[in-house]
Length: 94
Image (cartoon, rainbow, N blue to C red; front, side, top):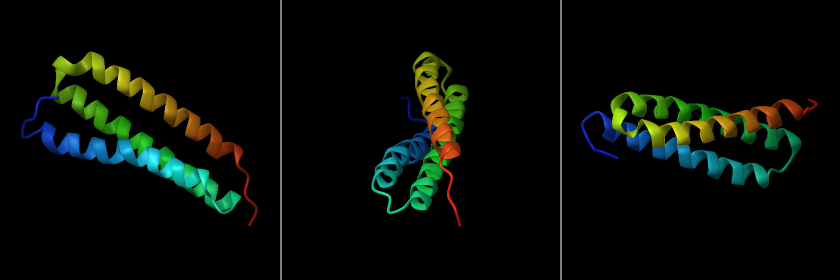
């Protein structure tokens, strides 16, 4: 990934949100209740969506990397859809 004044902060943010998805999924896997599980999956959804945003920014900033970034974008989108599905299927009572 080329490092420029534009891409350096994008790379930093992309690494943060991209790795956060996995960390939060590990947390969800060890949730203490259905409510806790749903909350942590909700965080996974948000982080996957943020990853999609930064991948879009990277595609704009580095058109020479568009093919690889498109693959990553597709994978992040699939994860986002999976987390949305899980989140919507968990019904928590108050």
